Length: 470
Image (cartoon, rainbow, N blue to C red; front, side, top):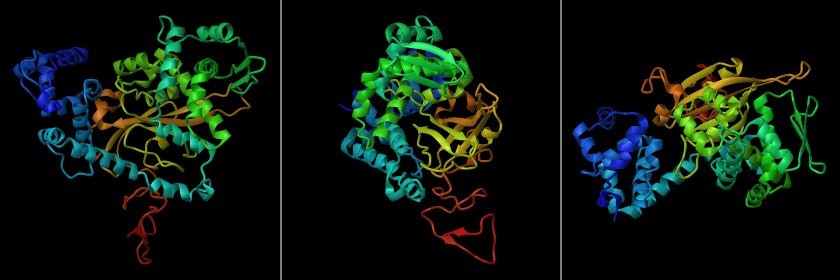
């Protein structure tokens, strides 16, 4: 029987959700657009949820309600609702009509969902053109680091078997604290893994002698960076089998790519040890993803906290779908991941209108932006310029910026959206992926014409750029 015919009664879930959000019945009823008496009937299971209410719950409480969409029929309705809401379509179908389609034509609904997913994948095809234009991709071959980057992207930046193993290890090490202390990491390395440890100012960031079992950590790093390096080495040794199994199943072409993936997976596990999934997700939601609060709670850097938020994609307990990237002083994107519809260009810099570029030049200040991509999707983006000290006068500090953002549907969960007029046409910045991929004909910051458009040159007219688009 379908989800709509089965009649969904969810009184206890509604009451639990309302209590978790600290809402009175009158507040909850107002959010859902129903009367208090109707809500009371729903909470006492006197009436079932309608498609319109399922739509409202998924819209207003996307993270909380996703955990209740467990059966196949309800998941189909949720997936159909998401696909039909794409800005590609001029008008959104009402939830009652979507429910009837999911109920009466499940095969058609599944095909529509699959076609929409294929459409979104095809939307990234211009990246291939961008890749072909890049000098590093001679004869279409990918460099080892590109293979690893693409592997993490295809994995959704979540590696379940490793994340769960690291979480268990982190929970064992942390005791009653939120995160393992420096001393706990050191003791585990020495006692459980037989690693001798020394801090010095002349080791690079980390130097491990596998034959001697000796680890040297650069004491010039900030404390949170030292903890991360310890956690990396601990993960590389304690979770060696799990990491090796993932690498073997990755089917990468070169030995260098496999080695880079091993390092990337150890870094991933280090983040999961210091910020165990369930506890980090819980605290992140409690502080509405306030990065400064999270880095203090878990003793990690601003960048580490941002990166970890982008990995919270465990089925059944997903976090907010974020995009995350790191940009250097030259505008190169040196880290990237997106669990949203926004996808970064594979090569070159990001759109110059994006706030992250301004953040690079203004360290230790958080900038916020409401942005809209050419497909009409809006995002709240936070960016902060960072300076990582070297610990020595004769070594220049590293300067870069990190950015974290989500679609406006999740703005209530993102503290950086506070104060933004999310529906404003005047305050929104219309960005693209990169100039080579952006179709906007009237951008004053355009550096190159789109790769898939012909240019029109009029010698008698000159705009901001010396050509128009056909």
